[in-house]
Picture 1 (cartoon, helix red, strand yellow):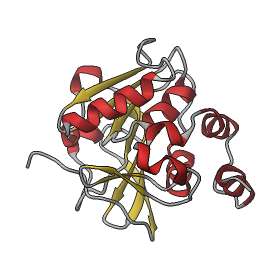
Picture 2 (tube, helix red, strand yellow):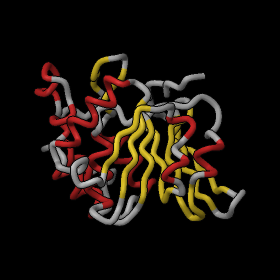
Picture 3 (cartoon, one colour):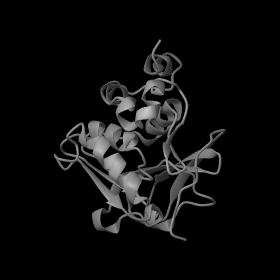
Picture 4 (tube, one colour):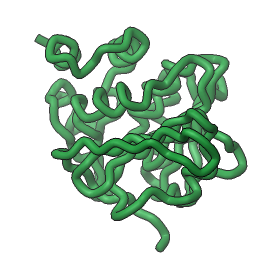
Length: 206
């Protein structure tokens, strides 16, 4: 049984659009040459520079919380290998946009090159930016969704909350929990914690 079929069977992957993206965007396209044969393993794997490509189960869980939709504008923080950016680009489609932010120039290039295999960069659906993701990206705000794939330490940066539309969602690891924040009003957020995960820390300029 493939990892994707396993995730569907176990109830981690539920939404048709998300499943379709998982099936059409191949994880192997986002890995270093020496790791490609491990692409179907349900675990996080190194991509160099002390960073990893996330475990498929974790990405599935985060996407189901995030609920990306066609036409959404999504901020993808700590884009790394580009896998989550390409999955998001597939879901948001031609009317949507994914802003992928990565602090390490080498990784930004790696992710961009990987995502370009699917023409998302050329079509302008995915745009890669080398910057400190903890500041968000005011130039393209407001966003429908914000996804962060690396652990922040204590609290969600105010910049992310500010740059989110009302009814928008933020999904991010804080320590070893995944958190969902739903913006209910300009200042009000509904929040929910899902403990028991492991992530590399988000690198910021601080």
